[in-house]
Image (cartoon, rainbow, N blue to C red; front, side, top):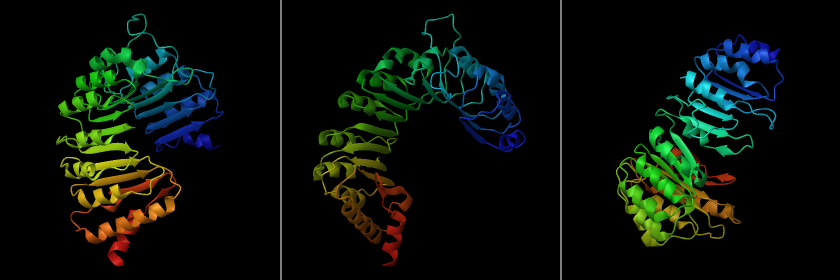
Length: 352
C-alpha cells in the first residue's frame, strides 16, 4: 500500500526506486500525480518509452537518473533520449545508459537541440562512460561540466563550437586535448588536470582571464609548485595539489607569498614521513588564507601524527587574532578514517 500513497502525496520532491516490482502503469500515475517532484531515480526495469511522454511534460523534474534493473537491458534508445532532451526544458541533470550513438555526420538520426541541460552522464550498454552524445548537438548547449580522456580527442571541434558555455573541464592523459579546449573555451572557471605535461598547461593557465580553481591529480615537483604559485592572477583563488616528498622552505615561502590564492588543499601522499611541518608553517604564515584543507594518506603512526596536528591547530587559534584566523568550518585535516575536530580545537584554545 505504501506506493499508492505516492499517487496523492503532491508535496514530495525526491523519489528513488530501487529494484521495485510495481506494475508499469504505476510509474505513469506517480509522475502525473506528483507535479512538484524535482529529483527522480529509476533504478528499475521499466520501458522508457512507456513513461517518456510523462517525463517530457513533467513541470518540475530537474534531475533524472535512469539505471536499469537488469544490466543486460538498455533503458533508453538514442532516439528516445534525444526526444526527451529536445522537448523538455526543465531537466538540468541527466544520467542514463543508452544504446548506440550515431556519428556526428549521420544526418539520418535526430540531432540534439536542448539548450538548458547542464550535467550529462551517459554510459554505453557495456557500462562504459561515453561522451559521444556531445557530438550530436547542433546548437550551443548549456552543458557546464566536461570530463574527458584521450579517446575523446575527435570530439574537440564539436565541443568548442557547441559546448562553449562549459565552466568546468577535466582531462586525463591528453595534454594537447586539454590545452586546445582550455584555450578555446573562455568560460572555464575550474580545471581538473590529470596526468598531463605540466609546462603547456601552465602556459595556458597563465593566459586565462577567468580561471578560478585549479586541481591537479598528478604529483607536482617543487619547481612546478614554485612556478605555479608565482602566478598572480586575481581570479585564481583555489588550488588543489598533491605532494609525496617534504617541501623545502623556499617552496613553502613561494606558497605563503602568493597574494591571490586564498583557498588551498594539499594532499600528502608520503605514507612514511612523520614530518608534517608544511601544514603548520603554511597555517601560521600564509596570512591571506580563507580555507585550508590538509589531506593525509593512511599512515602507520596516524594517531600520533593527528595528535601533533591537533596541537598545531590549538596553538594557531590561541595565538592568532580573531579578525584574521581561518574559521573552524574552513580548516580541515583529514585522513581516510580520521578527521580532526577543528571546532573542538578552537574551543580549547579559548578556554584553556
